[in-house]
Amino acid sequence: MTLPATAAPRIEVLSVGDELLAGTTQDTNSSFIARELFALGLGLSRVTLVGDTAADLRQAFAAALDRSRVLIVTGGLGPTVDDRTKEVVAEHLGDELELDPSVLEDIRARFAARGRAMPEINKKQAMLPRGGHAIPNPVGSAPGVHWSRAGREIFLLPGVPAEMQAMLRATVLPQLALLFPAAERRLVTFRTCGIAESELAERLQPLMQQHGDVVWAFYPSWGGVDVKLRGQAPAGGVSRAGVADERWAGLCDGVRRVIGHYLYSESPDVTLAEVVRRLLVARGWTMAVAESCTGGLVAARATEVSGSSAVFTGGFVTYANEAKTAWLGVPEDLLAVHGAVSAPVAAAMARGALDRAGAHVAVGVTGIAGPKGGTPEKPVGLVFLALASPEGCWTRRLHLTQRRDMNRAIASQLALDLVRRHCCGLPVGDPE
Ligand code: ATP
Ligand code: MG
Image (cartoon, rainbow, N blue to C red; front, top):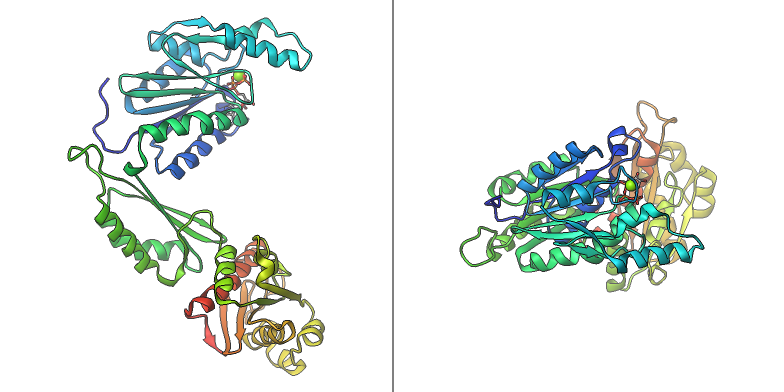
């Protein structure tokens, strides 16, 4: 067994279980592991699915082990005869299983706590390899196993997602963090809003080509596109390749320049709503909203973050034309001439909310959410946003999708984004 000659540790997952191949259970374990590894700045190289048949399992394990520096196996640690992962792996590694009395006691105690005697078959779960270490299971009976062999780390975890997750977080990830120090991992997330994935990718193409050793990942959602970059820092002196500090900093600056004012956060956990709240606090401003097609979603989004009461004054959900006139003072003739879904009405809604709520900034949203109600001039997905402040009023015209839920979600996010842009002195839209 020779280790792969790459700088990045090669990590693989082997998901075991007939139910995964039958399609009755989805392999959510590997995606969970992938996400957790990515958050640590480590990447997953391959996922293999295999059934419980011993020969297949043996073959898949041997092949995966041969390729990887770290191999995480989930499933087949239970008490039944079809749970044979531990036995197959121990045999492959030339290790022997022996009864661990303290683990057996723990399992017995778990059953006793529920007023039951331990079935004999559960004894199998207390059989542990001499050459490995038990991984404690805080939420179930079967412990996992960790082997360090020939420069490789092998982790066996149960298939039950709650148990696998708890053990991964409590034991496996901390071990990997020790094994691959933070200084050797590089990870950055650029959260964007208001720019399509394809346009982002096109803009970033030259940088992607220039830095082919960095892993680039695009995660689009209705809220925008997150761009994640993962690289390997040089480690162990000059012998291992990696992205040096200066090059990494230069790359991040390059990405910031290319993404420009679509970038709202570099923290994966910080939402646009939170960014807006912080900006408003910093300016000492308050905001109000006037919504039609989003039916209160902008207000909901603005208030989903703790501390929003300091910056959010209130919102008007004005679905009917009469409500737009009575509650926001939108002139009837404006509605008659331009229609409710128009830039002038969005602007009048924003101005009405600004005045009536006494806020420093207000947004207005009006559009055709669909799937019905579209016309050739005003198709489904047509949305107008407006932002009003004492300095003036700006509007934006959006052409979104055919889906009602998406249109409402995207419009609410982009409405919030107008506030971010206004707070940052960035272009908001066309002057009204
Ligand atoms: P048990 O003690 O329950 O037998 P085990 O370690 O043997 O645990 P499995 O028998 O493979 O695990 O699976 C137990 C449960 O976990 C099943 O409900 C199965 O559907 C689920 N499961 C197994 N593997 C995965 C996976 N990769 N992703 C999601 N769920 C899984
Ligand atoms: Mg099982």
